[in-house]
Image (cartoon, rainbow, N blue to C red):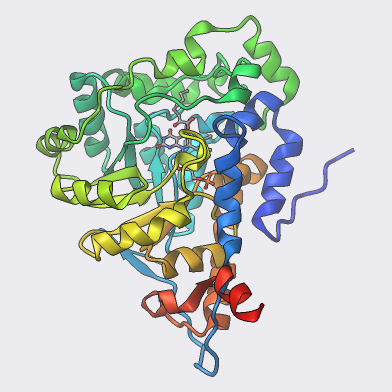
Amino acid sequence: MAEEKLNPISLDDFHNYAYKHLPKMIYEYYAHGANNNETVEQNLKSYLKYRIRPRVMRDVSQIDTSVEVFGHVLPIPIGIAPVAMQKMAHISGEIGMAKGATEAGTLMIVSSFSTTNLEDIVRENPNAFLMFQLYVRELELTKSMIKHAEKNGFKGIVLTVDTPLVGKRVSDKKNNFQLPKSLKIETLEPEDSDSDSDSDSDDDSKTVISNVSMETVQSETIPPLKENTTDSLSHDMSKSLTWEVIKKLKKMTKLPILLKGILTEEDAEIALEFGADGIIVSNHGGRQLDTVCTTLEALPEIAKVVNKRIPVFLDGGIRRGSDVFKAIALGADAVFVGRPAIWALNAMGAEGVKKMMDILTEEFRLTMALAGCTSIDQITPKHIQHKKAYISSKL
Ligand SMILES: Cc1cc2nc3c(=O)[nH]c(=O)nc-3n(C[C@H](O)[C@H](O)[C@H](O)COP(=O)(O)O)c2cc1C
Ligand SMILES: CCCCCCC(=O)C(=O)O
């Protein structure tokens, strides 16, 4: 029986679809976090701890949701966070993700664990606004990855600073997670990619696991391929990263360097001292250190110390337009979504990613209107309040 076409109304609809359709090993790689997923869950719950304080009678017939990010005007303050290995979610992988993001007019950060090489992403999406997420490896490889991103027109380098070691991913260990053998991390061999790119796009074996069935993935992954496990794929990521690396990176590129994974005001201050061009408040979607603060909890102290000197972004747990509103009220210039983009890609490819962004945008626009804000700069800390304030005043 032909399956009914998904008609998503909220982001949860994409998630439910992916839960039903992705093989367990892949679904849990994307969905789960470190240890017992405490931080994954708390990231989501954080938003419900804040109540919106709406202002009324404000003529909300025109709402402007646009925001400027490093000189680019985006129609919405919502981008796509770097997520590794997107071809496990959909045949179109990072190309489809970039297409959905571009059609929504927004920015995508491409993971340094991309299953599509940068040339192909850019060739298929010449108007995309892309940044490259970097895990620092050995110096020459790091340099060539940055040069490669520059050559392909990427507009920024997002250095992930919360992963000197990969967090304890319990589900991945139980499932013996590994990248299916038909796929490859294309970004780790940047020098070869020019010669690879044409043959890759014609190679059917690369596209075996579109909208992956359980049977396909199981047959792809038995016997286990040692070289494709989380440990082996991440073995050469630098464990000795210190702030000094920012100086080295700044010598390698003129692109803005954003630090992703800052959770304290102390580190935000140091980031400024070392010349970071932007900060992404992130706990890696709860996949690194479990029971850290949620990103919404960390945001106010970071926004305060940065004091608008550089842009402050946030990711983690954004699932509704009201979540975007609350993050902006607490000091974010814009936010990023990780898993929702993957679920949307899985369900409907590029069209799904665009649809997901449209849903989130419409919810955000409605929240702004009902809260009495007609532009992003009108959203202030006065528009939200921790729920404790209401409970104590009423009891
Ligand atoms: C499956 C998965 C893979 C990820 N891969 C990367 C990555 O390669 N690099 C990185 O900096 N962050 C990575 N992240 C973290 C995201 O960029 C982002 O911080 C997180 O997903 C935001 O939380 P959300 O999923 O609740 O929106 C990954 C997250 C997920 C869920
Ligand atoms: C297969 C390597 C896992 C770490 C890199 C991807 C990532 O950041 C993630 O959260 O997963």
